[in-house]
Image 1 (tube, rainbow, N blue to C red):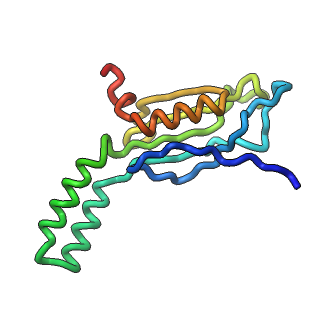
Image 2: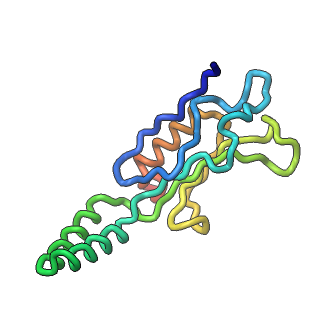
Length: 156
């Protein structure tokens, strides 16, 4: 029976949603310099985004109006205040994939992980990180998720 590596364990704080995580605890480069093509070589390894509290507030308001009309205003105000305390910067998402430079031979000499932190969508990349190390990538993912303000306001 073949032993498979475990998916990576990430330190994901509250307020984030993991849509996909197919990153495994293996380094992409084998001792001979070739790529371990069995794991971690997809362009779609991880997708994580912050909760959209605007949609949450709308949902609470609709639920309150339908079920508790007398308390609708109070429940909506509660939801708005709660959301303000929970979020740092709405619409952040983190995307990780394995990429190659150019159209040439897809070997270890030109492959790398790319982590991108987005605000609102692909038109607003606020941080980009590239590495060939799985362990360095995991460290950077955890830092981005736990300290997003560092990347939103790098001069602070």
